[in-house]
Length: 230
Image (cartoon, rainbow, N blue to C red; front, side, top):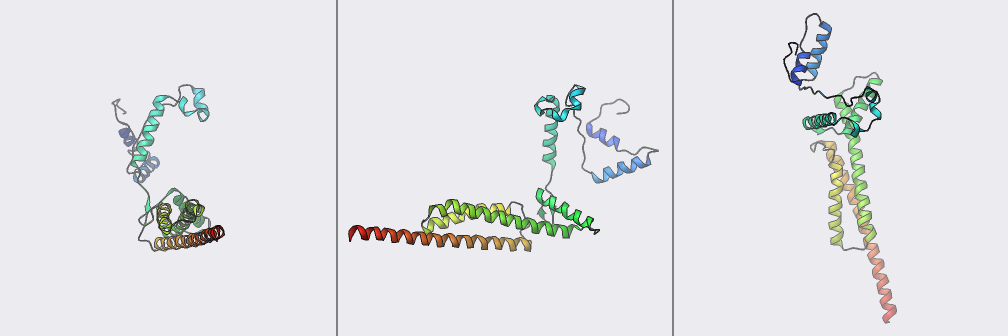
């Protein structure tokens, strides 16, 4: 500190944020930092390289060539940040990376149109968009899996087809639920019902193909037996 005593990194940060006489403008900034970052900390990290020339071109250096102490400190810092992070939520629903991007996009649209962005209206659009994407991805997973595991192996017994449908639908449902929507949201219930409808339509198609393939196989077998024995 100013007196030469040893202090921790956090204490150094807090000392830097203390108001100083005659620095009204800087003190305002210090207050803003303290208000916006109430849970704060400070980490000191050594220089990544020792040579000044390397420092000027550090973006071209491979990570493995940086000082081991620097890499250790950076990795510890990253781990510490990730351990402290809490998932962002709006209206009880988790905000994923793509949803955050869409939310920011909605804010920008409102600002560019000289409107005041509101969290609720922007979030409604984001959730609606994510639900559409999740439904599309989940149905695609179901369709692809049923094509690979069922349509390519017809005919099969109804019991086997039923069990396969359950397994594939469970995998597709995981994709749909991945963004962790609020299960009490009416929009979520609407799209989940649509997911059930879409998968049932696809299952009905597979069942029809299974019955048709089975019928053709039986007719072919009957014809072969008739030709052979009569």
